[in-house]
Amino acid sequence: MESKITLSLFYMGLLSAVIAVALSVATFYGTVQEQVRRDLQASGDLVAVAYGRGSVSSDGLVEFGTEDLRITLIAADGTVLVDSDAPAGEMEDHSQRPEIEDALALGFGWATRQSQTLGTNEYYYAQRLEDGNILRVSVEAATVPMLLSRAAPALVGILMLLFVLAVVFAVLLTKRLLQPIRALPAQLDDPNLANDTSRVYPELVPFVQEIQNQRSLREEMRQEFTANVSHELKTPLTTISGYAEMIETGLAKPEDDKKIAGVIHREAGRLLQLIGEIIRLSELDASGLQEARQDRVELLGLAKECRETLESAAAQRGIRLEVEGSPWALWGNRTQLWELVYNLMDNAIRYNRDNGTVTVEVGKGFLAVRDTGIGIPKEHQGRIFERFYRVDKSHSRATGGTGLGLSIVKHVAEAHRGRITVESTVNVGTEIRVTFAE
Ligand code: ADP
Image (tube, rainbow, N blue to C red):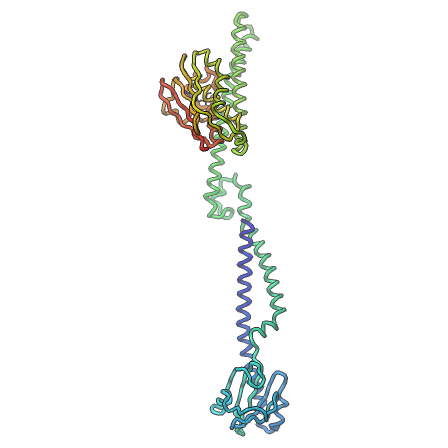
């Protein structure tokens, strides 16, 4: 963006400078022409006065001629008597020249034209003298190309200077324009930022507000998550600590030791699982979609692998695990997708009734896990993917749940452009389906 703005400013600056120079040259040309005519008239008048006083003879008039100034004396009948630039005798009758006609009729006359005698473009000024002859003075009229070629070195210099100035100003202006935008990130923590138009362009206020809102929402969610984690860690630790204390103080009977050790073992296991899932979630938070899409993962095979891992846990409650459908593969992260399928199947077992069934179906672009379990009441269905959200806390705990499984599922699905839908009827069963965009 910076180079774009700089370039536009530079073009604008250069264009206006060039237009300004061109207009100045045009105006200047007009003024110069005007001045040349005035000088011509003054010279003519001077010569006329000198001639009128008799201080110069008609032949002596040629001496007033210079390199630039041409002097011609013409008789009233048009015969050229004297000319400073050409032999008078060879020149034709001048009575038809407009400036001479005017001078004869009105006393003076002007003309600008190509000289037939000299071949150059000339200004003519003619006046009738007291003796009836016509005195004509003329100078070469400067044309625009002539003037330009004379002024060329200066013009090139000016244009180069303008070029440099345009570059410098474009760069400086861009810096100034972008400075408030550059300073924004460092100030985003200031809640008054959006109200302060000296620091934020009004056009950027909605953008700043949106970022600030997202930030505070993220901060809120993080705090909530930290509070939840602390609470979840505290519960098993309190149990462990309590039982250990009972043994330490001799409050527990020796024959209870085995039972107490079992509780401590179970609670420590829960802690480990919780910490493992928290670590997995934060890994998922850190890795983006790019890292996720690396292997060709076939979902039917993956579901069969998960079935092997979960088989014994299911068998303990007489639950049947079925995997059906046709193979379907997508680009993604194998470990993450394994976790997705595993968590869905694990839930379908844990929230199933004894001797129930879990069916995993894989097809083109989808994977669905169905169970014959307790179901999820409608009002909870939208929230079960939140971190630590459980419909029935004690049931979840009793079956070894942490409340994080489905948030991992959702995270993985999103990283693989998958959409999750839930269909569930209380005491009938639940189907969770992931549909992939691929
Ligand atoms: P948990 O570790 O508690 O199972 P999850 O994030 O996996 O955490 O699930 C969140 C909640 O959603 C669970 O506590 C449970 O109430 C509900 N739930 C998830 N899967 C099922 C299912 N297949 N049948 C009934 N309820 C379920």
